[in-house]
Amino acid sequence: MSGNYFDSKKDLEIVSAGGFFCYACAVGKPAEEQSPDSRYCHDCYEFLVKEAELLPSNKRPSWIPRVTRDNPKGKNGRQKSIQVSQDVVLNMSTLNDLKSEVDIIQPSVAKVTQGKRGPKHKVLPHDLIMQWRDEGMGSKTIATRLRGEQGIDISYKTIQRVISGERN
Image (tube, rainbow, N blue to C red; front, side, top):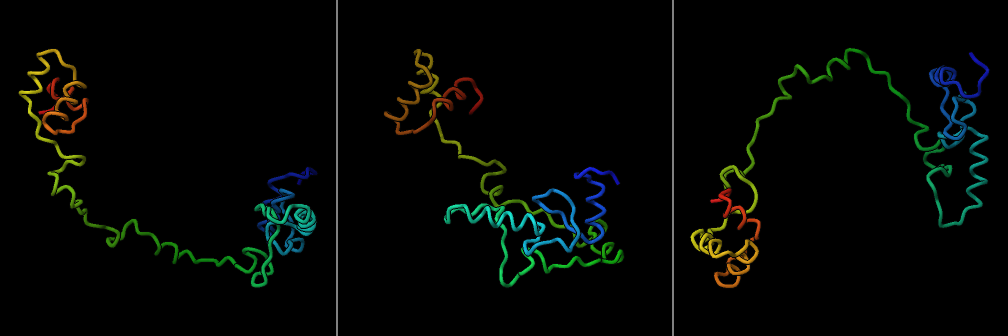
């Protein structure tokens, strides 16, 4: 091992040997040095508790050490990792299992709109629109006149589509 304080290989060895990773020191530490908050070692824990006392009472950042009566070791202190046998892992796969197949159910909206979503097409007086276009009116003017005279509330963009032949 190297003599550097920050050494990822050394940290991995310590953690795999039952230690933990201190979030404040940013290094692996032996399990004996773990504080009641599983994120920190004893030294960092004591320092952060003193720092937290200096903060206003209404401020509670996430780095403040926490310990509850039900969980004296910290957030996940009592949880143990359970080793699962390889047989169980193989049985958990659904790749070759027929139970994972499902029916493809078409949405009920498709029946109502014949496969198209969105607003329904309004019946428009195409002859009147083309007549007004031939008289030199623009699409915005035509839309305004349709709204006023015919009571048809339609966008000028739709009028442009009717004039260009994109919409029937």
